[in-house]
Length: 238
Image (cartoon, rainbow, N blue to C red):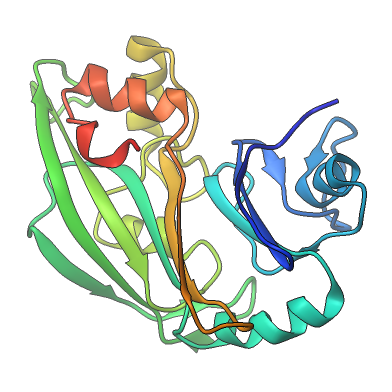
């Protein structure tokens, strides 16, 4: 049986490092008979029902937080609706980011609705690289950046859509990304996964008001892709 790596556990909460390809829970839209669901796997692994407190996309790896019982879920859930919980991501994106630190502020539609909602993403450029291979007909080399990302709001696919908006597409993103870049990385480096990882989380524990900090090592494909591209990975591996 599949086992999910546990990063943090106390009497009321636990966090896992979700692998790429695992969904948080079943939805009517998911028709893949081979799909794996974190809620189902973790409930079987722990021997009791768990309650997911938030979601991350199927192709995104990293921290996923659960409650062990319904009252604990109710106590912490309000923090996700506000700004109390901090979630930081790592991503490899196309091109040299224009600034070492900046913001992307662009309204986004919720799901498939047309009404736009405010959305704000903060980023820090951790490393840049240029490789002597052309990934398009416009340039003789290819550039990439490693970024730390903090979404101040929680819109659907916010990080992926915001970086697409400024044309620094998340590598491996087949929905909002750059197909030429994805094809180039797959052909040259045999990598097809999306380079987006839920890296760190901070929240105030409802029981004792202690600040809980959780960190998740990126998966091996992320580390190796950063390495072959020449992006230093020392700063994000624990």
